Length: 266
Ligand SMILES: Nc1ncnc2c1ncn2[C@@H]1O[C@H](COP(=O)(O)OP(=O)(O)OP(=O)(O)O)[C@@H](O)[C@H]1O
Ligand SMILES: [Mg+2]
Image (cartoon, rainbow, N blue to C red; front, side, top):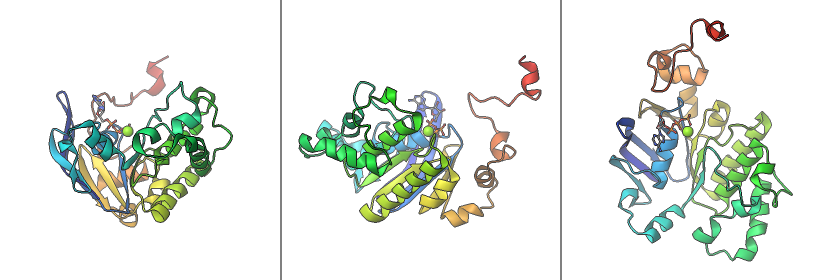
């Protein structure tokens, strides 16, 4: 179980997370939705211990992340997780199969002679074959995403944190990946957090959906309830409307689209 209590995260003077309270029960898939820049990826990085919250705490299987001190303790903690980074984060100089199995030598006792077969098996799960010896530069964007996904599941983690698993994939492959997330949950009892903007995938994989807004959890509910939510921000987000309360308050680094559109540009 992942239990976040009052998590506050600041970068310099900017407060990104303002007290996130969220519990992910063992075996469930919790989907996080919310506007760009609202802190979804930051929250995942807090869970895995890449960022350290200024306040509040995150407890996983009874272990408080902030209290981990030694490298061995941190490695032991991270061993529980697979992490799909939003940007994929493949190593350019390594082949696909080396990327997929990169974590195994640090996270598992699996003997190296088995790595290549594990890589092929994980690649098959995400619909890829015969690319083991390619370098990332030789792959399309969607292929890179799926290689990163294969890497996230390679060590058979108990928890998987997926940061936008279907972004950049065609609709059919998005559905294949949603099915894979569901299979991992049902067959391997993986507990997962999925950050996504893809509402079709969200409704399909979620046990519950949490909406982040202005550094807090605005609403957390089952997909059917989110679909009919009356909260104006949630409504606007799930309906994908530009008009509504979310746009009323512009975030840092964001500008109101120019009233005259392109006329002022050319
Ligand atoms: N390492 C960092 N240092 C400073 N600021 C950061 C850092 N990481 C993220 N931020 C800031 O925190 C805010 C939230 O970023 P984050 O990546 O968590 O957003 P997000 O909700 O995942 O957005 P998106 O949907 O676009 O991926 C942004 O304003 C970003 O500039
Ligand atoms: Mg993000």
